[in-house]
Amino acid sequence: MEHESNENTLISHSVIAFHRILSRILLRILLSIPLSILLSILLSKLLLLSILLSILLSTLLGIPLDILLSILYTTECTAEHAITYTIEYAVERGINYTIEYTVEHAIKHTIEYFIKYIIKYSIEYTTKCIVLSVVLSTLLSIPLRILLSIPLSILLNILLSKLLLLSILLSIPLSTLLGIPLVLYK
Image 1: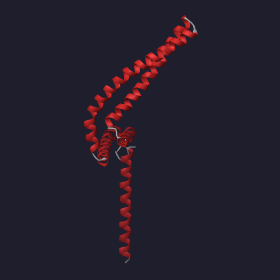
Image 2 (image 1 turned 90 degrees about the vertical axis):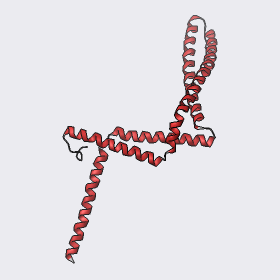
Image 3 (image 1 turned 135 degrees about the vertical axis):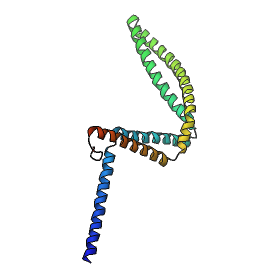
């Protein structure tokens, strides 16, 4: 009876010791993953989340994803250039006419240039942005749709397995160069 009890105790201690060793090895492997790779995993998840949110938004609004992305890109591009050129021309013309003529003329010409250039550049850049975004979305739509047809869990598994393998492969030459065993590295 006492002999069986000793055997059971020995087995349980062996199992606990094995689990501790295994957990330490796994922890050291995890710690050997560079910070840049961990950040890239996080960023890829955020990018995937933003794509999924865009699809959800386009589905709720009843607008195809390509058109929604084109609208968002066009709006951003138009607003950015309109504001930039409006401020630039308003300041430039305002200062020039203030020095040369009077405050009255400066205000008048500033308003004229403001209206003229905001309309001109808004139309010009909107057209360019629409064409560019339609071309880009058409080129990207096929690989994007193929990518989106793959289940999320499979994509994440592939990504994580590749990154883990890359991390281990990078850690081995580094630990060899430093003369430190892989399990002790980090």
